[in-house]
Length: 186
Image (cartoon, rainbow, N blue to C red):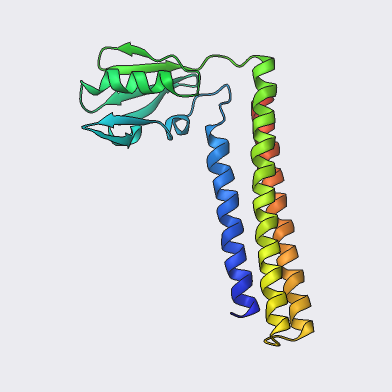
């Protein structure tokens, strides 16, 4: 493995950590409705657990209401139960062949709790990026020990990995700050 390959591999892994954070932050509820909120909900469908999006159409009625329209009428009750039992604290209302899910306004206390969750997720992502940096630097030191690269190449590669780490940590900080702003906006 060359230093360039280690750099590329590390960059890909760091990118995955940031993408994972984006996915996790999408689940954190703000005052506004968005369909991504229901992405992680699974329902029983003919004996197997499938994502909600595979059995129903999810949309927005307005800024504070999500609509879920199952493709099969008998799925309405199953979907409603799955949403109620999720950790989102939502209360869907059946309206004929459709579910309407109003977003309750967030209290100040709930917003503060959500910010703690967001900061925790951000810290987990930072730790993951730093672990990837540590692994890359370890690989570079092993290569130096085996005399596969020179000391200068190893130092340059370490600096590149550090720049990569700084860039991804800054991206994580930006994502966390944006989510905090979004949460505090009433």
